[in-house]
Image 1 (cartoon, rainbow, N blue to C red):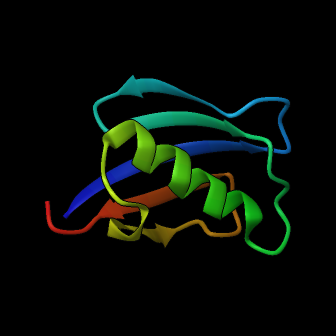
Image 2: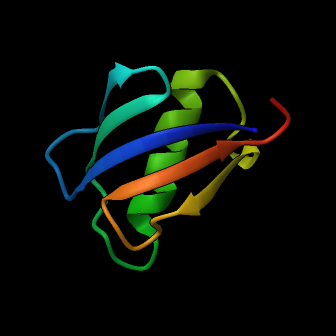
Length: 75
């Protein structure tokens, strides 16, 4: 499983992804960090960037933190 390190800024003015290095990203999402909205937006944005289906991504650690680990299944 490939693992990505993410730093997330929820409630931002834009949806944007910046690559920081090998499998490390900083993301800004408009969704607020309430009712799992920001996590869903993060998985959607990352899946579009990687060109994979969002259902192949799993939150491994940090579902309630801005620092997250996300795994790509089947890689």
